[in-house]
Image 1 (cartoon, helix red, strand yellow):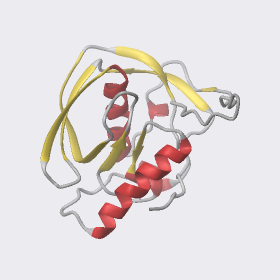
Image 2: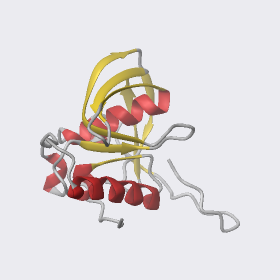
Image 3: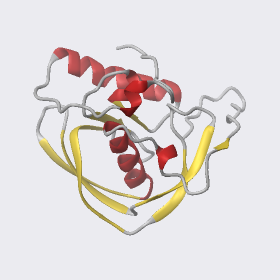
Image 4: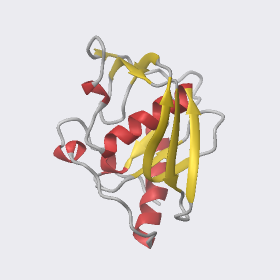
Length: 166
């Protein structure tokens, strides 16, 4: 397992559509492990394969009080409601903006064993699923912001604690 470089806004790979995963291979399995390591190291709650330079339809998500999710070839099959909230992105460091997302989504995907799964998410999980799946189609949250992006100050670590940032 390794920490991979996170591609940042301006890198052409972030604007390209991803290809489906046809089979679990040792390379795909290693990519998934690396994506989790990279996401945790960067203090994120989600990461899509193109953010580490791989054009495959894979996302990893770990929001508070949830089980870590691996979504392969994910597709939102149901959504309802609306929530408006601040979003940031590991590929747009230091920026944030308000985005409207569904309050609830249902996502069908394959898990790490290439078995079909259905994930229902509300609030932060719904927002994260939508955000990460957008990456797979070359869409960045900055394309959807309501009133533009603004700079955010990084959270300072207190008492040496290594707390995760959202």
